[in-house]
Image 1 (tube, rainbow, N blue to C red):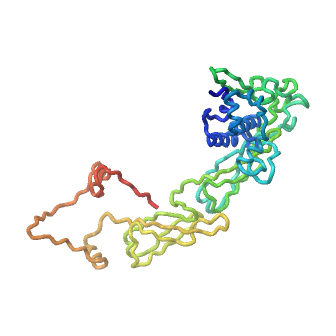
Image 2 (image 1 turned 120 degrees about the vertical axis):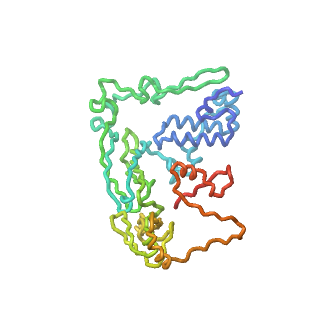
Image 3 (image 1 turned 30 degrees about the vertical axis):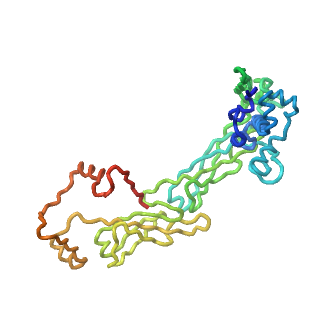
Length: 400
């Protein structure tokens, strides 16, 4: 039976966790707690130490049998630097992001601020510069981020500057570790006497500050792309300032759909123009009007798709345009003057002849009537002309 569970609890794994489970759990927690990502340095060290012990079969066996005291007696409490172990698992040194040799010696970094900017397809076609107002924390200019007079800030004795206190609770043969914010320092790890606090920031070391950023949206950008402003996030004492990241959100357009640098649009065409030719117009994203010439005699069918080359979205880097794909929807008239039918018979291909039936087959003439709207909805919901077996699911294809 395992004597202590502290190291297992630090990694959030059961006592029978496999080597692969331990590694997976450590990677997850270490990424979140790493100082370069604004995590808790002390918790990062504890989690790394726990993994170092449990990943070594010999030291894990000693810990399971005799706890930390057994490791101390066996001389197994020491180990490599947490940053070095982290670098071994994640590849390369050079801090959290890898790079050159050796581990990062730089300060932790404050969290990045992420803002989403909604833009129209017109903005992405033409390009646009917009202004974004944000509020961030900056170091107090009066105390320079110290929170009070020189020497007024002292480490909290209750939590030893960690900002949290750890309580051990005995539960039968197991020891449960409970972590909570320190009451004396409110989780800051520091104590400042009220009389010595900075009058400007009230000991908080930072103050809110408004910042105006100019966001340049380049032609051809896409939804989901980001624009980064380095070092414009919240400031904190002893920390590298994070970045402001702008995420482009593309609004849905009422006339065009976009796929990379190509645009897709539907256009209605009357039956006469579809059969006899004429002109159609499309309003483009830069307010230009594209005139389409339909050649007389070239029939446009319903759902036909044609392409206009070189009129699509520009590519972001070189601004080379894609194409515009046009899907035609032919609109039929509600009624035709019977007197004009002979002219249609001359212009159009002949009617399909009626099927021939044996003489003994009974034939009866019937009339077509308009469908009641309620009956039509029922018929569309369960169309017997679909030809699908009863009880099988129907699959609807999406329009391109």
